[in-house]
Length: 187
Image 1 (cartoon, one colour):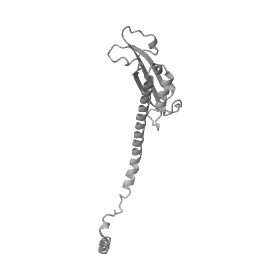
Image 2 (cartoon, helix red, strand yellow):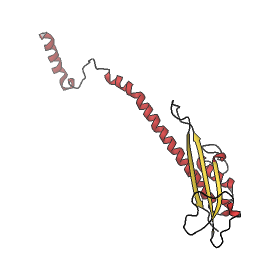
Image 3 (cartoon, helix red, strand yellow):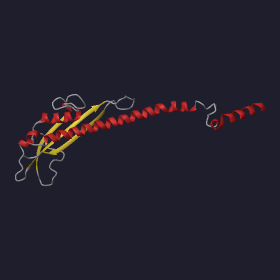
Image 4 (cartoon, one colour):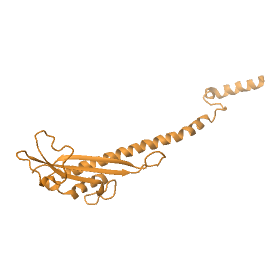
């Protein structure tokens, strides 16, 4: 026993200060690997959740911005406000990232874009284009007497998209809606 101890001391002296930095082989040698194996699925699930929330935020921003792009096109004048297909195309191209006229593949479709072109009487409050707008096409039949007529355009967009992974108990699709109302410029 004394001999074994003496051998260890001699070996420690020979190895110098680097001996203390080495880890001895013990029963706990694989513990860190085992703990990592238990935590890894939770980390992966957390990462998928973060990516999914990021995708949902992006879709929501794109759908809302496309509604704004459609109303900006329609608010440029009365001729644009009456051009429903032009408004839908502006919203479609903004959402799907295409060039004018070839924007059909992507998040939105023409069926998911609703355009309302309506008129109201301006009472001077500055709130003439707020919700709810009158029915579409009221600009031809409105009579305001001495008050000026205010022309408004509203674009509503809607998109449904699937999640990256389907988990039991979670929805199989997410919905995002955009809405924008603007006053049409008089020329």
